[in-house]
Image (cartoon, rainbow, N blue to C red):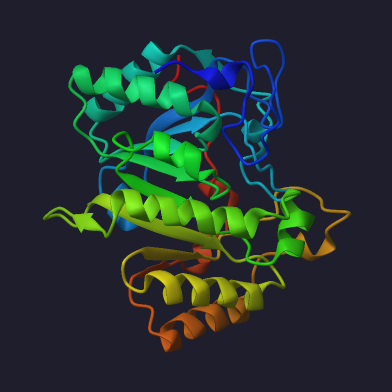
Length: 300
């Protein structure tokens, strides 16, 4: 598929219009795919990682750039390896050969056309795994529609439901409505969850929500919205793994982990609401050891 975004990029809601053949836009990505790591990842949700791991490809650059990003070493595209679409297709096949349960595309929005091209090439050469689109939730329906037939599973964030929070931490006051619109499009595309006999997801949606310090009440609002709209037709992943990886002079509230009391209050709220299809985490998830090293492993 030809990539018109290279000369006037409007793949994400920023719609910065950058000519990526000449300069980078808001996401920091050039015309070529840049990726920091491709490997089997064991710390996704159980129905994604399983026992053998999820075949993750961590892309460099990000349209959202949250101030607390745990992958900040590649989110600004200052590190990573430039590759062709054909090399990306080879990486998919190499991950399959290693026993991956799926191909997990982490922060892929700004490389949408390359992902479509690489997946098609890999399918022609023997790729049989489901493709997971692992994104921030800050998406355009028009871009999601391009992925119909390429993506099987959407592993998407729903970070904020209050525009002031989205503005403060991600410079994206329109995040709530954008995430709602994108999720509607994702759901219309892949529908309700489908699992194989081993409990691995083959099709469907998991919506992740990372609880932030001092924001448990907003987290409850998000869960209430998601359950009210989708009931048991999607899975939620309610996460307590927020880890302060930098100094936050301008955001002192982000300088600590989420407390057990905060997390338990959100989980109790979800249970009392009637949420059944949800993943939760224990305290050990809030650790820098869960952040992979983006040293080009599996890319070159």
